Amino acid sequence: MKALCFPLLLLACPFAVAENIQLSDHQVLKTALKEVKLISELHGYAIVAGRSCVDCDENTSIYIHKIPRPGNGVSGEEGDPGSSDRYTYPGQYLDYESKQLVEKTRMFYGQCYEGQPSLLWLSEYRDGNTWIKSEYLIVFGDDGLEHRFNENRQPSIFYTENAKCEELPGITAETEP
Image (cartoon, rainbow, N blue to C red; front, side, top):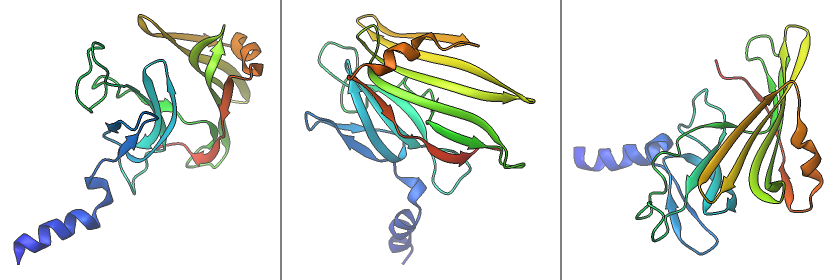
């Protein structure tokens, strides 16, 4: 009887099993995420949305996984084990206690910086009664990922008009406690 209950418990616990995603070449990429969704594939990387738990206070986030390919240092179907950094999912975020709007973030992916594959976040966050603009850019180069941050300005907004730069629609959510 106990042997039958254990597998049934796993089925009843959606947080127990991570999900896989199928890439454009039909390769399966294993993730440690739940409610996972492939956003794009850029320059050997899979851009995915997901959460590390279900029925918890964690918001859906963006993750970057290096796609396993012969000779790129990532083997099997696991993807890059060092790609556990969480990035903000685009949208409007309300403070979980006051329900006031505290952050507005837009995210773009594709050729969003000087014709290079990149991810771009344009954010505004509340600091008291003032809104502060910022920009976070990840450029996918031959030598890996290059991260850039600008506070109080958004110079890369110019590149979002490129037809090969797509905006990921945002959500409305509460900040995490």
